Length: 118
Image (tube, rainbow, N blue to C red; front, side, top):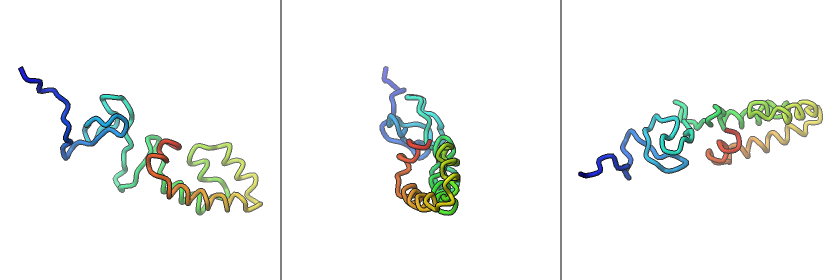
């Protein structure tokens, strides 16, 4: 008897590789059946979204335009830092830091962003 349930080594057009264990899984799978790790699902717009629903582009735009108020920190779940930015917004220092953080978010890889903020 031949083993017909062997794991395929080539992925088909409706399959993808698990980003954690490398197993071939269905393209629409949200969780890998082999290792149980939630997969990073891209939205319909083609922009990568973290498992918690945070977008790297949205965080960067918040940092650029509303960084002085700490809105990007609230968006990313860093509430204490968001409050610190609000308290010191009159000094314009949070605005400068927000610009730098926006550049950091845009240059950060999708995997690194998802690992840190997802």
